[in-house]
Image (cartoon, rainbow, N blue to C red):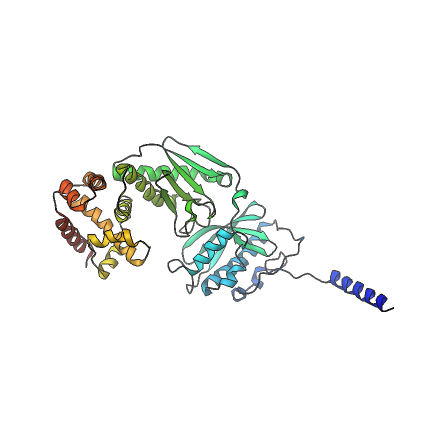
Length: 398
């Protein structure tokens, strides 16, 4: 008899469970975005029923993603790692790491900056991924990917195996290698790279020795070297390859939307390639390489130079020491800025653009600043240093 009562009690519990409403996620199709306030960002996103399918109506998707974006912005503003984990895809380990680094970055973090974001357009790429155009109040306009999951909408990126086949687009000067995911963007990227190359050739008077590779990455997982959020492009000397981010990705739109936004970054990295080819098979010291890339990309940054001069007028020894110390600190940015003025001084006061490149080549061969300065410019190490420092102070103050 006791056994019969227990069985009946168990059946009653099962019936009650089946009739009850499952817990809805914050992003569930039945819950309006207005019901979610930014202050709930530290709460779990909520569980979506196993049979809940990704919504298909764009207006509904947009409303739900706006709610998710509000929570993301609030988590970033409060520096709340737990809240961020509730809105960022935790299964994509690379993207998770990048977002945590972003949250804590002294240079890029939005903590305490009251970021606000507005979804302006959504496009279903392929289930469960939606491409989202948004504008936010700290850095401008972006294109991010949101993923539908059993926790609702999450900020995410596809895994590499979801990006489709790798393919290539070849031009007379370079080859762009990309994933099928970015097929629709290739024409714009080819145009941007072509503009960057033409601008670099015009500024430097030099051309690439051979056709080079441009590798486009739509995700942080596929970016060469797994570089951080602030790196828009890079140059790999051993592979003679430029690595760029897709112009419709989190990393590719970190500083704005559109392939044309990447032209200065591509031009900078292509100038590194020109430096590399000019001095091959030798190399050059780090600040010289960066100074040439900045100056010949019209990226001298006068405000940074002025700020650096209020800190210290550096010596050539200081610049050279950066190669040993490494690191990207504020002093690094100051030293790099004053190093760029050293190239400006060569061009404007010591004989022009071609003389500057002649010195670069000579220095790579001689490995002695005093001798290379004397050979190309007819000045000693001390004369160059004094002339550069005086030129810098007169031009930028300090």
